[in-house]
Figure 1 (cartoon, rainbow, N blue to C red):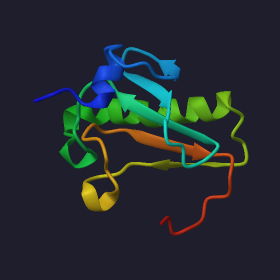
Figure 2 (spheres, rainbow, N blue to C red; figure 1 turned 120 degrees about the horizontal axis):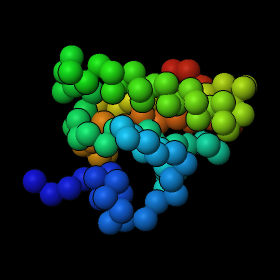
Figure 3 (cartoon, one colour; figure 1 turned 90 degrees about the vertical axis):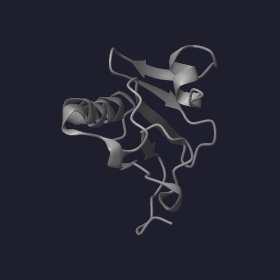
Figure 4 (cartoon, one colour; figure 1 turned 180 degrees about the horizontal axis):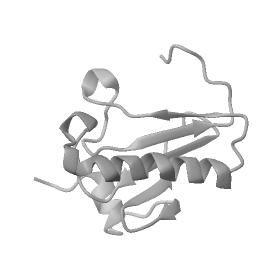
Length: 113
């Protein structure tokens, strides 16, 4: 199976504007931002989508959310932000590699579209 674009970024085969990296994940700026701040927080472990995560992935999933909170503080997103995880084509998934979208710096309507 070919690498996803995220795996290629993690392996430094494709450049990206990286905001954060640690042993478990990488956070980068989306190339097609839907808000003035639009980061993707991506686990280095390939999990195709949230519905395929297992109990073994529990700590990693928590780490992604804690990383989002740390980034929100770093970027002064005190007025609020939204976290989004897409699953499958009807959920808006475009890359089969779990990732968390962090969107901020504009009013975000509900329900999302």
